[in-house]
Image 1 (tube, rainbow, N blue to C red):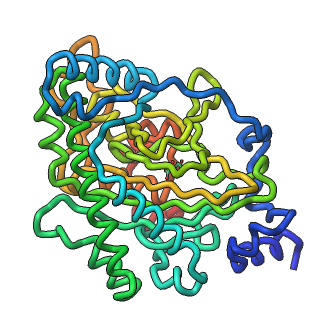
Image 2: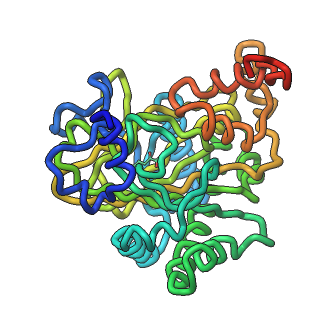
Length: 373
Ligand SMILES: O=C(O)CCC(=O)C(=O)O
């Protein structure tokens, strides 16, 4: 077997519990020169505004106006901000952080009970189950679906018990409560985004009320060569809004003004960013931006990411107030499942995902007798 094939086979079968102790990391985890972190020094801090959700929810005029102004500035520039005074129970956040740590600490065979199936976006995944074979992320994830539709209120608990058994019922329950709290927080942020965009507080809140979202638990093991690898490669989120909780370790970086910036973890706050679907809903007025997660050689890291997505049948189309001769339609109507399929099967999400998606939508499907298909 050629050396590269041996290395590939090794990666596919060697769990991180062994890889994280190895001084040489397999080549599939080494990122190209222009993408790897190279320097282990912390890049400069990204100056992002703290949005006081308690003040906003109080309805007090100056608190609402201030929050709307701060969020508007951030979303026109890079789409990142933090929410503080958010009202989410810290014990619940701790419970999900602790439960995630204990899940990822399980033997591989146990985690693989929830193994993600090809083409699916839910389940346990690590780089041995990755759909790409180069630029592999140094991480393990567990993703599952959350729905804001009343008849699917048990979807998270059902997933945990069904995929992993009754031993996981309590963790499933905590994750379900966490997702529901995230969904409520997203709706509050959507209300604020509606106000800051001038379409009124109800518009996006109502659009996302019955959201069909994705929750992902990220575990970044130690890496002996953190300057060569990435926990999560540079990408933009194709979803609508992401709410991220980082533990105390840190690793999130955002590309603004042509350089990487770090966002220092604050376990009492959430980092929020705009995704491509909301960029389309705002007719390109608000934007997301490239971000990544770096790894380190001393401390494993956990982050909890809630990705807000519209209900599957919702048409993603901007409100008419955001379309004008000076700001014509930027993207055609689409549904979230179409964009999800595009990013799952055809495209690694980056700054140009929406443009590539629009071109893909416009390209004719291959004909059955086409020798090229
Ligand atoms: O873990 C992080 O800091 C970033 C995670 C992320 O960007 C993702 O899961 O898409």
